[in-house]
Image (cartoon, rainbow, N blue to C red):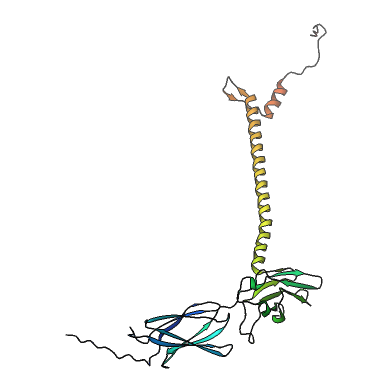
Length: 294
């Protein structure tokens, strides 16, 4: 035996499982489920978007019978902060969440040119890759002194360069350039960071590491090559001396070889001295012995 029970839908329940699917610079995709399974009619949702930076509100209406609802919130600002509320149109219980949009990218190709008493920062226009950026917004520049452990705001500009003066000798600095922050510094772009060492050469951290590794390689490789060449020459010299000694000994042994005995015969210095002692000493010639001169 069994019985089928159908629950009466409660339109006062909040939407379920509200979450963000994807967030971009100017949009956000959110998703939620209906308050109860398998709605038998269209349901009207109210999506309220509160801008926490500008302190403004917008309300959107979504009508659907689907159990799972996906909705894209458009016309947001890069680097913005928003509070999203979803509820049925009859002002039932609500579900809420916070969304932070993606900030503007960092400027590309940040470089330093050193002058006599100042430096110039250069970078590419952010409008080349960010359609949401207007040059009239401008850029702001910050400087960090690692020796003093102090960060300073240098100013802002609508140009693609900035002049920095009064740098102290022996100090290392880090410069950052980003899209100018709006609404009391709450909407900022990503910063491009450049290191400036005490010798007055500017370089970013990745380029610095690459150049240092390249310099080390330029020194180590020739040294290793010279060591290998030196070792090779040493082996050749030792081999030639070994061959020369071997040939000299072979020639010496062959000169003292006796074919009758089948071996080489070597005489010591003592034997040579004895033979000289036993040999008769020539004292002179007799008058009756004729001398023959050949």
